[in-house]
Length: 290
Ligand SMILES: C[S@@+](CC[C@H](N)C(=O)[O-])C[C@H]1O[C@@H](n2cnc3c(N)ncnc32)[C@H](O)[C@@H]1O
Image: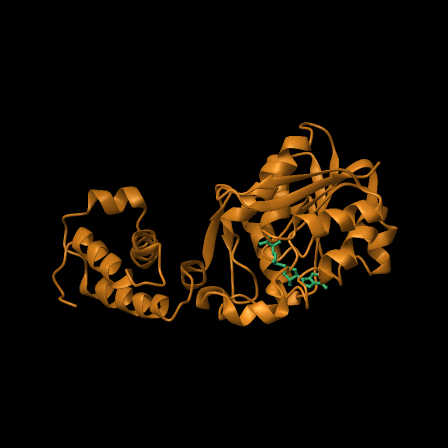
C-alpha cells in the first residue's frame, strides 16, 4: 500500500480488501480494525478523515487485514466485542458474544423485577456476557457463572473486573460440569437460570462457516450427536436449583424449539414460551418452575 493515504481513503481501501464472498460485514470490519489500529474513536477518525494516515498505521492495518482474510473474526483480532452496549473481552478460549444472544437478555429482563434482590445463575458462562449484562441491568442481583473451561472462566473474571466494581462484588465464577458439582447444589435456590449451551450437532461442525469452525472453541459449539446433549443434562437439575416461580431462559438452535420444549415439560417446567431473534428464527425458550 502507498504510504500517503488519508484516513478515509485507508478505510475505503480496507473495506475493498475485505469485500470477499465469505464476508458480509466488510465496511463494519474495516471501521473496527481501523479504530483498533489507530486507537482513535469514531468521532476522532471522522475529524481526521482528510489527514494523512501515518505509514506505520497503514502497515499495521495491512497485518490486521491479512488476519481477517484468514477468517479470524474481528472480535478475536481486536480482543473485544460489544454486547448489549458494553465491551466484553474475548480470547481463543471463549465464544464471541453474539447479537442473537441479546434476545436472551431481552427475554430475561422482561420478567426480572427491578430494585429487588435476586439470585441468578449462568450455565456455560464463557466470556460472562449474559450473566454480567444481567447483573449490570439489575443492580441488586447477585449471580454465579459456571463453566467447564478454566480459560473461559479467567476471561469472564477479567470482564467482571473491567465492567465495574459493583458488578465484580456481586458475581462468583466457578469451575464445574453443568450442575453436577455438590457445592453448587448446596447454595440457596435462585430466581433465574440462564444458559446458552453448545447446541450444534457434532457432525455439522465441519460445515460451519470458517470464522466459527476455526476460531470458536469446540467446547462452546459441540452439543453432541443431536445437539441436545447439554440440555438433557442441565434442564432437570436446573429445575431443582430454582425457587418456585423462578425461570429458566435458554438459548437454542433455530430448529430445536419443539424438542427442547418437550424436555422442559417432561422435567416439570410450565408456561414454556419461545422468542425469536432479529431474523425471525426461534432463538430463546423461557419456562417457569411451578
Ligand atoms: C455457546 S458457549 C456460550 C458462552 C456465553 N454464555 C455466551 O452466551 O456467549 C457455551 C459455553 O458452555 C461451556 N461448557 C461446555 N460444556 C460445559 C459443561 N459440561 N459444563 C459447563 N460449561 C460447559 C463452554 O466452555 C462455553 O463457554
